[in-house]
Image (cartoon, rainbow, N blue to C red; front, side, top):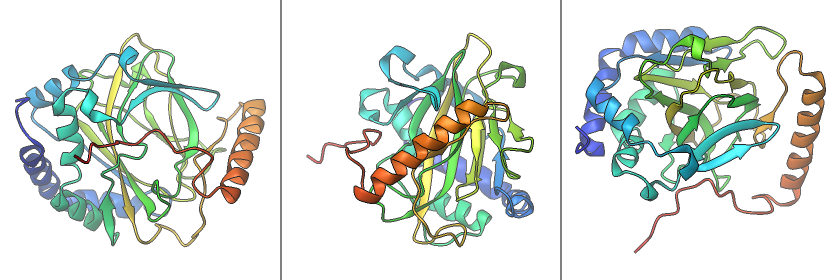
Length: 276
């Protein structure tokens, strides 16, 4: 099934979402006061998803991001990898799917991100993690508000005890998070705004958690707090000193962006396409 293009994959995604539209809308509405989210299992045919997983590169062949904030592997320059990966990423940008997910979430003016700014693919192996954080409020050109995060997990037989679960903190970092397993063939859609703290628990097994990532943007933010912010990290409960350092780190980076609107250097995590 690896010969399917983005339009055919989008057909499958759209039908699955459409069949579950009311259930997903009800779930998102119930959670919208904190961090609106929904997840949908068995999104695509199993053989296709196994194909997608098999086409992921080795971790040594993509960029590692390792700091006090995070430890993971990411890639957005998709023409370096198997074409199927690019096809499935951009399937989620099909206008029918964007419009349907926007309708489910009750958002307007929603557009996908062809530049894959902070999107693309990610991989997390043993010991990898992502500390609690808020995603950058805007797109790469600071023109649109980031409103939705789409995460599609493709590692077969991934179990909760493996770690690497998505964690949502709708009541803040002093309360317990909602843990969502990175289950095979599961799509998670979550709102991004000024209070949408989320993280990924440390991977505990010698296996790789693979994810296809997309962000949607809009002319309007999800909440009423129309203020720019950089990607902002915090410590987990109990990480007192790490939290202090991450707060200072975020303050410094935010200060820099007040002077240099687009940062000192261009964010390398975008898909630079050959216009020719």
